[in-house]
Length: 149
Image (cartoon, rainbow, N blue to C red):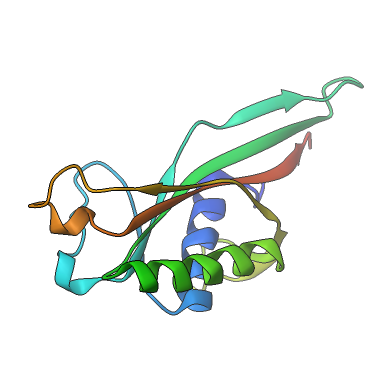
């Protein structure tokens, strides 16, 4: 199995953000329970639609574009602005280490580039929804190739 797969890419992105930004990052999946408003700041990583493009020449390679929505939730607007810059810098100017999440030690098996395609601040729907205050989302794409064996 190729090291460039959904589990490894998503795990690598979450781990990289936690390590680089220094705040916890959580996978978004069915049934996840996120921290309460008092436990901010934190990041979320949610899988979005992937796209695959088969390259000509006897279908030797497939380019896969993995898409994620990275959320940032903070306690204040100023904290959001500061951490927003940190997230953008960490993804714009560095390679993300690709790890093999199927191995117990998560060995480093390569590098991947993450591209931010959009940054979207989101206001809370109501004043009672404190956990929804000071949110921003980054649309992130990671491209890679899988080759026929």
